[in-house]
Length: 338
Ligand code: FAQ
Image (tube, rainbow, N blue to C red; front, side, top):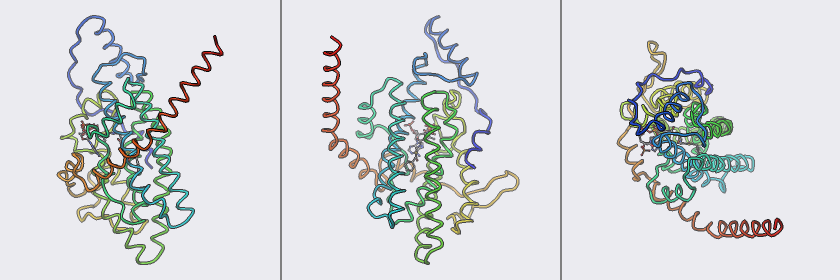
């Protein structure tokens, strides 16, 4: 169902004007880069690329990595309270996967010439963003299922087109990430299906969690296209393939029938099928709340960052020990080679 995103034609947005190029050699490099982008080819780490392309990728990939790492926290909070051994094992695997996604993504961003320390410092100082969605609390077990169903569902919808991103390392990382996200989405949906066959109290927990997460998930796709400063250039460069609003619409259309099967109501009285547009109409998203959260004032922003900073500080001895071990190993290798 989510793979339909592969089939959506690219483009639709006007390309920005040509960039100023200082000399002939640079102009040739720029022309080579433009030709690769126009031919839908891949840009690899050793290829020449405009500085703005590099910066955009570092911004997006590092923010994506931070989202995966911070995104471990809301669900990680439930590992010790999972209702059964089976659910605990699934949740442990899922949260570990998210950590792995963060690591692939940090590695992809490092190929652009930025260091892991620089990226982590940008997160910890509040300079770098991470997804708004992870600044909300997980209040009951149904929240874990809803994160799998809706948050991972939204993440897949956004990330499938990134498998075709023009930057090779990011595109390749996304292929594996999407396979794992698909398992995450299914495990969440299956956990909710089980609860919906349970007691009235369990059903009410699921509905309550859906009510709290639905609008936040729609906002995850980013601001509306007419207020998305990075979109036009991102699409021109083949980094973004489908706009924020188009992805949001696809997510709503894919999720409505799933909600029906589950037996929950999506909390939007304006949600209805629009035959003429071939998609659902839906109500207005609270963008003021979104920007509050993005700017650090959501319910859990401070707690999330404090947890990450503490984990980084507590892990300092492990990094130091690993570096000392690597140095020793290198010295031993050099001695043997001498
Ligand atoms: N939260 O001009 P645009 C996951 C910022 S992974 C916070 O439209 P762009 C897996 C944006 O950065 C979820 N900030 O920007 C998981 C920009 O600010 P900047 C993360 C947001 O880059 C599941 C400004 O607003 N996924 O869930 C958000 O063209 C469960 C203007 O926006 C990715 O990162 C937001 N929601 O489009 C893990 C995917 N939206 O940087 C654990 C890759 C926008 O100029 C548990 N990223 N902003 O200062 C993307 O596809 C894009 O970067 C967008 C934003 C679509 C997020």
